[in-house]
Image (tube, rainbow, N blue to C red):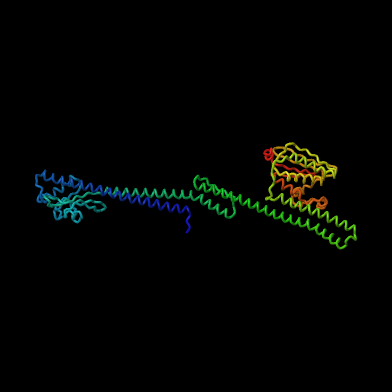
Length: 487
């Protein structure tokens, strides 16, 4: 059978308090009884002294010799005077225990104290008679070591015993009230203790069901409150870890999806030209040099496609290197101003083929931490794209400047522009707006993917905006803190 912590606290507290109060009542009873016995004993000792004194004075006043004959003769008078002087009943018995005074009608012959007095013992007994408590004292009257009679003294202690009973009754009432008060207090306290534990238990059950959006309102400043805080921290940590796991899962799925798309694209990009190359090679082998025009066409196609495949393989390797976490970049202080100017100068040679001018406007002393070769590769790729897809007899603007704690690189062409629907996909491997045109220009669609990976390795950000028939602008932003550190 399962007991809740509230019931356990209630049961154990009740048992402990019950045992404690019972022990207190028991001890109080014993102490009260001992006090009563002590009071009676002292009274009996005092009564005997008084009786002996009154008895001697009686014979002295009456000028009688204190002997057995006078005692038996004056028993009634002695009993009456002693009872009157002491204020309690006194009877006279002979040495055999027979009552010889007739002042009182009560015969106490069968009392134990009379029997003990016959045996020369001083004793008293407590007798309950008609709802009264009577204490009877009996002792022998001796002269020259001879017992000449017995005195029996009786006193009513009903009032003392009534007080004792009243005290016990009050003690029981107080103990019951205390027990009831403690019992009620225990219920309240146990509920206060159990309430947060029950709440934490319910919360843990919700957590096992996967519900982490819980509101735990426990404000107690004790161990339970500390446990509540730790529980909240645990839930927040688990929630955060699950969130991270979900993100990693989604990233893994996206990565698997991209890997599959990448593999499919690579397969397609390699399979199509290789099939054509194989076809031309077989026909040339079969026909030899009989058809010179076809021979020239076939060999030219084989050479061009082989070069394109070779470039594509090189780009794939570069993309793998740029995105790999295991490849270490050679970070150093780079004079980005000088690097940009030199790259623009080199790319001007290619631009002249299309009568495109590279116009650079770069601030001096743009320094940053980075890999010089990789940053040059970024600039070459972007400027090369601007030349490829820019209009003939146009200008490509290359700007570099420091603004708002960041270094900006902007490359803008005057080409046909890119439709907005393509912009978000431009950094995906093998993505091309026009596949036929890209093949003619020798592009495999990997350049921007390589650029993006290199920029991100430098803790930077790249974006593209474009308008149809107005041109395209590529913006790269590097954190200014790296610029400040490198200066």
